Length: 262
Image (cartoon, rainbow, N blue to C red; front, side, top):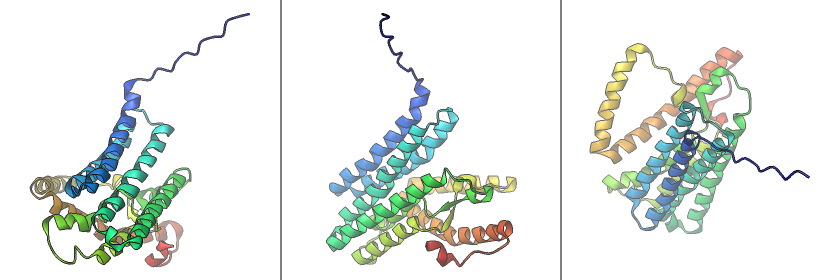
C-alpha cells in the first residue's frame, strides 16, 4: 500500500498579499477611531477615518497594479468598508453628540449602519450585473467612504468654529439621517475614477490641486469642510448628467430626481 501523498503547501508571492495587508491597515485605522473617540480625542479619530478612506481608494488600484486581484480581496475590502465607513463614523458621532438624544440617538446609529449595509450589498450585487457603459460613470447613492466623511462634517466644523448651530444635537441628528438616506438612495452620483479630463484642463486642475494641498497643510479642517460642500454641490449636477445620458441612450427621460430616492 502506497503511503499517503503529502499535500504541497501553496506558496504565494508577497505581492499577492500586499493589497490585502493595505486593506487590513485601513481597517485598523477605522476601528481605532472608535477608541480615540471614547477618549474624547476626536481630532485623532477623524484623522484616522480620513486615513482609512485614503487607503480604501488605494488598495484596489494597488491590487490591479500588481495583478493580484482576487475574490478574497474584494470580500475583505467590502467588510472593511462596512466597519470603517458604516460603523466607525456614526459611533464617533454618537460619542460626540448623538448620545445626548438617548435611545433616539442610538436608533440613528442603527439606521445609519443599516443604510450603509444596504448600500454596500447593492454595490456588490451590481458588480455581477451587466450594465451599459455609460452607467459605469455613476454610483447608485453616495459611496460609503464619501458618506462617512460627510457625516463627520458637523464634528469637523466644531474644531475651528464655536457656532451654536454646529453644537445643536437635533441638527446633527438630522444631518446624520440625511447622509444615511442618501447612501441608501438610488440617486446617481459621479464615479470619480470614470471622469475624463480634456488635455487643456490638465494644467489648471493640477494647479488647483497644488493650491488645495497647501491649504490642506495649513488649515486641514477648513479644507475638509470645503471639500464636503463641494461634493454635495456635485450631486445635482450628477442627477442632471444622468438624466441627459438616459435620454440619449434610452430615448426617454426618467422620473424626477425625487423618484430616485425610492
